[in-house]
View 1 (cartoon, rainbow, N blue to C red):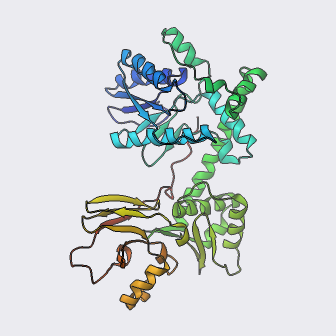
View 2 (cartoon, one colour; view 1 turned 30 degrees about the horizontal axis):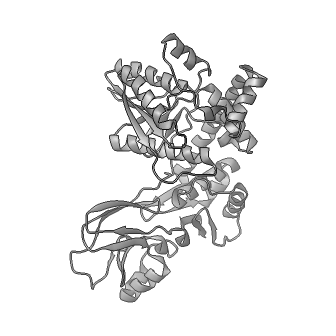
View 3 (tube, rainbow, N blue to C red; view 1 turned 90 degrees about the horizontal axis):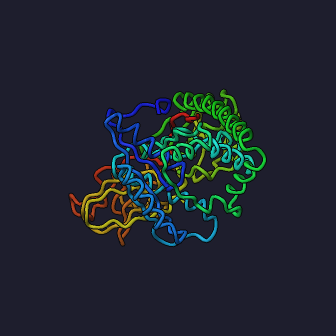
Length: 426
């Protein structure tokens, strides 16, 4: 824990506990560590509803934790369950439930029970998929998210240590049968590693991931330095990056800086194909004039010595109905809007049709300094008669009664910020 970073005076921790040996051992260790500092631990178990025994296992886990003096909460995954790519979707649902609970409860730290064996399996899985440096660096010991810090204190610990600890404490645990089901890729790799080499292979793969994590951290530091000097973010949700320093940086650093801008403005961290990113980068740093391009939900164009990156209007498809109560909404993965009570309206992009409406009503908006490419992707309130309000353009329809404007505040708060905490490796 000391290597992970600083904690508050009386640390409040959440631990993801499946009932398996690794997470149960971590929870008991976390309880001891937190209590020694006047803090507390809450154990969180997710019931996916994917196996008939899951609910009973969650109850059994709760009984063990209650005997250990640990608060236990079961989070249930409601709704339709996947029939394909089950493990990946279950993992996504699990993290969503866990991090949402931490956010709502004001808990800053979520502990996960991954160990050295899990790191080796992750490395092998990503090697099989052809991952680059970021993927092969494996799991981070510390990962900062908008809701909570994900911490893996056992990441450097050998796979047999948690079980040895539980045996010494005469503590039982639950074996998940899916961990031995070779239909799942990770389970097959786990069994294969054990058959080939019970210890050496795991250690070598985990050590390789560690070294790649060290390289990833060094590159990320350079990317952060480049973005701090060359990039700028505007509250209307667009970015610009100077072409000269982008071109002067090492290609790997420049590519990552450009990718980071696309992720921040477009909101999708997994939509960029490397070959398309490389082609965009080559044009962006070239001396020739650059035509407008689209990638990862973004519109990219050259503006003199800088590259402007804004949200592609056609990609901003989210629509939210807002009622007569005050409310805060997160729209398009980019903006948080605080809305006053009033008429029932719909929040969606302004779009070219909305722009045509408002400039007809107020022709002076044509001279607004906001870049033309940015305007269609702005959030706007609509009713059946058209656009009611566009806060970024200080527009409110005159036919609407005075004082009935709905937006109190609008803040650009992207899902993926431009500056990220360094990769936390073990």
